[in-house]
Length: 160
Image 1 (cartoon, rainbow, N blue to C red):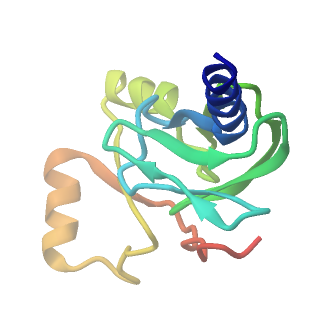
Image 2: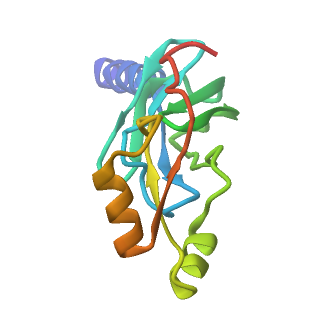
């Protein structure tokens, strides 16, 4: 009987100290309300451990210490970097992020432009040509479209 009690005690002791915390959540863009086109990077500053982000913006970081303080860092192309101080709990800690673009053009402005017939195409990642070609000019005139460039620089992963 004593051996059984000892085995149960050791098992519960190992189980209690073997548990790890999980941080999970969703990362969305303020422009679309969905995951950014280019997957953001997320990691824990203190551990330099990252999480995998799926196509709808959900992420999960595992094997963290329970009831511990961490700094979550998020970087994404065309968006300013974000950091959040968090404290893990006993199981799963949920932390969501909304990425706010440097671009002043937003969904409301786009819908207004469409209603009044002034359509703008947003070019992503500073790829706009210095001067429009003949084809670009004809396209703009024919469809009454204007090109806009985000003009942002891509973030460098891990540099804050």
